[in-house]
Each structure stands twice: as C-alpha cells, then as structure tokens.
Image (cartoon, rainbow, N blue to C red; front, side, top):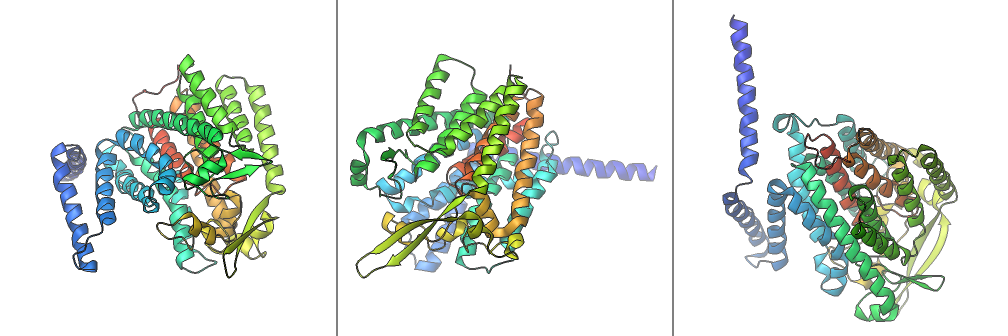
Length: 487
C-alpha cells in the first residue's frame, strides 16, 4: 500500500513537471512577454558593449542583438512566420552585401543562431513537452558525432581555420536539429515551402534579368569577375541574388523539389516550374541536370512507376561514381605582386588534395588545412569583393572530398550516417503516403547530389535552409495532424 502511494506521488510529480514546462513554453506565445524579453536581452547586450567600449555603442551590435532577440521569440512563438521570413532574407542577403553594405553578411549567422537557440532546447525537452513526437536517437546521435569529430579535430590544431571549419560544418547540422525541435511542424513546413517556392521564383526571375543586363553592367553595379560574374564557353552564367552560379542553381533546385512534391498540378504550378527550370538553365551548371534527373526518378517512384524510377536512379548513381572517380578540384593560389594580387586557377586531382597521406585518409588533414574552411580562415566578418579575392586559398570542389580533407573517412561515415538515417525516415513516411516524407526525401536528394561537384554541405544558403526544412519535414512526419497528406 505504501509503495503504491509512493508510485502515485512520483507520477503526480512527473505530470506536474511536464505541465509546468508546457505552460512555460505556451507563455512565450503571449504577446505581453515580447517587451520584457527583448528589453532584458538588449540591456545585457548594451551593458556588455559599454564595458568593452566605454559606453560607445555600435549600431551594428545593437541591431544584431535586436534581430537575434526578435527571431528567437519568433521561432518559439510563431515558427511558421520565422521560417517563412528567414528564407527570403537568406536568399537576398548575398546581393545585399554587394549592393548595400558588406557588414550585412553576419545577419545569416544571427538568424541561424536564433533558430538554434529556440529549436535545439525544444528538441532536448521533447520527451517532456510533446510525448506524441518521439526524438529519433540514431539521427540525433549521428549529428552529434559529426559535430564532435569536427570539434575534436584529431589531425589538426584549434586555431582560426579550425573555428571557421567548426562554424561552417556545425551550423547546418544544428539547424537540422532545430527544425526537428520547432513546434507546429506541419504548419511551419507548409509556410516554409510556400516561401521557398516564391523566393526561388523571384531569384530565378532576377537570373533571367541578368542575362539581359550582361556581365559588364553587373560589374558596374559592384559585382566582381570570377566571384559572382562568370562565363563558360562564352556563355554568361546567371547567379541571381546569390554569391555564384552554383549556389544559385542549388537554391533554385530546392525550390523545384518543393514545388514538385508539395503543389498539386495546376496552371500556376506549371508556370512557376517553367520559370524555375529556365532560370536554372541560364546558370549553365551541369550538376543541376543530374539533380533534375534524380527528382524525376523520385517523382516516378511516387507515381508507382518502379521500373523507370529504378533505371533513372541507377543512371544517377553510375554518373555520380564516374564524377567522383574522375574528380578534379579547383586549387586557387594567390601571389602578391608589387602592384596587385594575382590569382591563378589550376585543376588538380581532388583525390590527392583531399586524401593526403595514407595516415590522413582516416582522420583527415585537419579542419582548415585544405577543406572547406581553408578558403574561409582569413575571412573577416564583413569583407569586400577585393578582400575575398585576396583571401583565396586551396580548396576542393566536392563536399564529400572536403569532408574527407577536414575530418577523414571517420567524419565522412558520420556524415553519411546522418543523411542516411534522415533518408530512411523520410522514405518510411513517403511509403505511408505522407507528403512530408516525400518533401524530406526530395530536399535531401538535392543536397546529396549537389556536393558531387561543389563543397555545398556548408554552402550558403542551400545547406542552411535545406537542413532546417528537412528537420521540419521529419518533425512533421511524427506530427499527428495530416495537413500535408498526399491525395
């Protein structure tokens, strides 16, 4: 009898604790909380700034703290609005850095940090706040292992290049976890995909306008040759509002995936789809063709046309193997002359550059040695186009090889385990007829094919937005309401 009372008391305490947590999270949605929360955060930030600079406050710092506080609240109280707003901001930010001011660049990190600050704790408290949506431990464990490998950095030190590499590699992974933790996932996914499609259409339209303007006029606006403005075989490659044609094509392809697996067939959907495909065409990015074939294979699988789907999938795998076996990475070296910085481009074996010595195959050459972070180690928070050219260094044009260069085969296995588990969860839901599952698989397909020829696992904005939306889609799979069920 006594043990029964004890058990009942413990159960009551546990229930009360869960109820208190739910009430705490719910109270954040109360508009009355906005003023004190923002006020406290801003006050603490201003006090810290004053202690460093004697009361001379930086306007940029004030704005950054305000944006951070506002987005943290938005991701907690109205995640659908926050995600929908973040997508166009991320997409148009690279153009704003060139046309308005370079110091706008860190805005992406402020918003990403806000999403992580809001979403990751909610994921950690999922078992207390929302028992209907279980946390997938294999996926979270693989993500945590990958980040730990980057932080430990067995093959290298812990300098500036390491810090850049950890930031670049961990931000998208943390955004995946944040997406898994955000509340109202199906509603958030619907708003996010609508924003993604509309933004991709706008970016694609700008890419078409750039073909009319031509490279010379764009350089006159402030863009730079070999950074944003590029040509191939005499054809100018549109870059939209992004940093280069490759980032532009990847972002628009995410829009194509969202349109293909979210929208029902209608005249408007076909018109938007045509705009997106034409916009991708003027980027002249060949990997986009491979991504398109992959999405077609997935669409055929959704239509139960198994033979055609498998044939296309095998063709994509075979092509991917050929691309990786014959991979050529870009090695960029900068030489200083008395009058200018001369940048020479050369093609080198991506295998040789990424793998290094046999010992380095397993643990990598160190974060920041030749991988993704190598070209970012000298970056400042806000840099001009001229500084970006001067800061170029050795890099590998493949996300897979860049990962091997950073953290070796061990890191690559952890990366593939994370993506493989996410694909498994999405495919399982897709097999049940859940459109959220198909959306997750479609977005993942873009993100897994694109890195064949570009270090895009850390690319902005495709990796940031793609991982966040994949997390939301996988959370939606576990959410009871069927807002995105396929018909």
